[in-house]
Length: 501
Image (cartoon, rainbow, N blue to C red; front, side, top):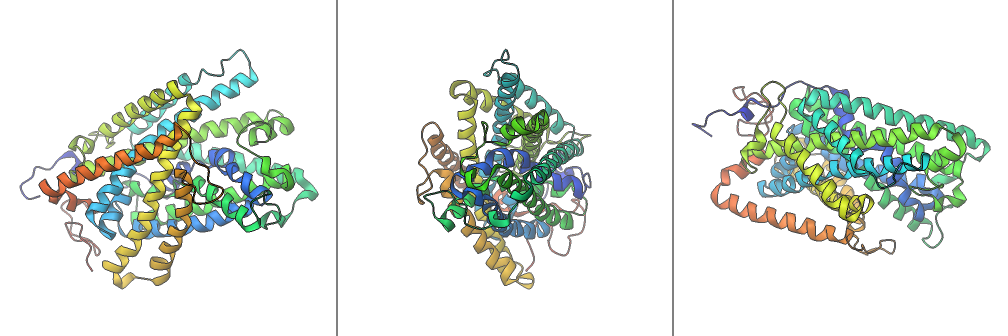
């Protein structure tokens, strides 16, 4: 606004700090491929059975529709606000605020979720190997992880992104290499029939079992959009963002298909309905029974995945909070940057406090596994809602503001298909029994719905106050801070961030 003193936020985040590789792995690690392969995807085996590879392929195609929409918007609207900016530009500033309000909430809860998994996974593995190690001594490992993530965030986006890249490469290579071993060991049992409907679990039907498995598998793809909040810190963001978002969804989707195929043919398609996330019929169980000490490498990859995912989502939450603070719809303190490292120090500190408080506050009374399930339900419920809004925003942006660039398939058909793919997953995550394979949630996991409802209701109250007292702040939700403050506007945006149409 005219007459305002330029703040630290006006100087912006560190420009040209990260390249395509780092930004790509921001999304890759946010998807947590090792944890997805070992824990999330096996949940679909109870329905798809040995046809789970087909379910993964269906989920990949479905997620690519929304990934395409996010990529289109990220290319045109490179902003740290990411999905909040997309909602503001494509639909309405009020929608953008509510999307940002929900997105920063759930992304702040992902690190404690992953730190809980780090704690109970490490404690259980150590106890199984050395029974003298207490199986319930999980919290020291979680606290150690919290310190690592906070340090990476404080030292800036270069340190955080490169840390994530190293971790991401390791976990992907481990599971790809192990999958190759499984395929070789399967020998003549290798079969493409797992990409058909003949091996689905009894009681769900051929197509029904595959569909049910894909709904649970969709949840493993969450995070492909995590590159978008790094737009203001990336080199050539208009190209980098699109490539990173689509590249992450495609590459990790291919890893999911490969790994699921490998385990299905090795374990046996006929008994794959009994495969799960723990016990002998699991990735770690198979590694222990058949490949000796190789289970240690697999275990390290899963632990590595929790750290990488927590680091990536901490970066997302702090950048989104920075963008909301800069716009004035969050406290201005969130827009404060470290003078040298250009990291959002207030956001990093608050993220660390929230992570430790949620991790211990839920993990100690309920137990880490139950606390994990509660946080996961909250996160997935909101994040799928964000994806649905992103699909709508894609259609709205190109219809309302950039008709010259509008393409019916990319900007109308893909958003519609993306919404259709995510609605069943949303109902499943919320425990709404709209389908026969969806089970009602039990306490305390069932508290996720009221928690999400209370947070979004609080957001509506804040929105009403802002609309009455500070409408100009809501208008800033759609601003794209691509150029330096004194630079001439680019071809797509004027100085207020309003898109020319």
